[in-house]
Image 1: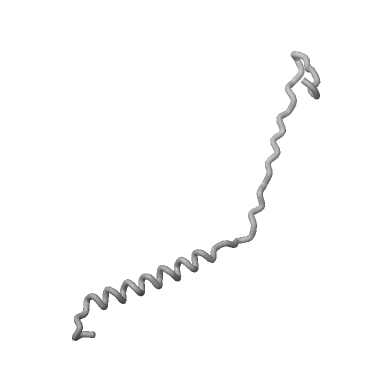
Image 2: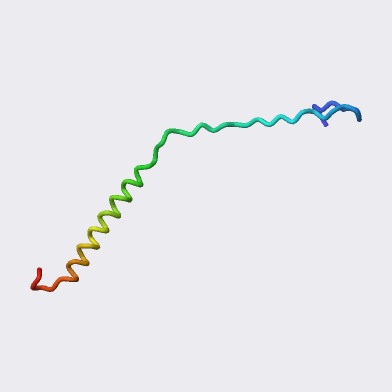
Length: 62
């Protein structure tokens, strides 16, 4: 094999070097969808309550 030197029986094996790459996280971004989703859910809840109230009342009560 090219690049490897032969070693004898009594030679210790070469050290194993493990390089750890630390990934630096970017800034905190991408959370706008949570605000938009919460706004949409709130609007749907208000619409649902309005429909429930309209369905529960009679024509005279309105």
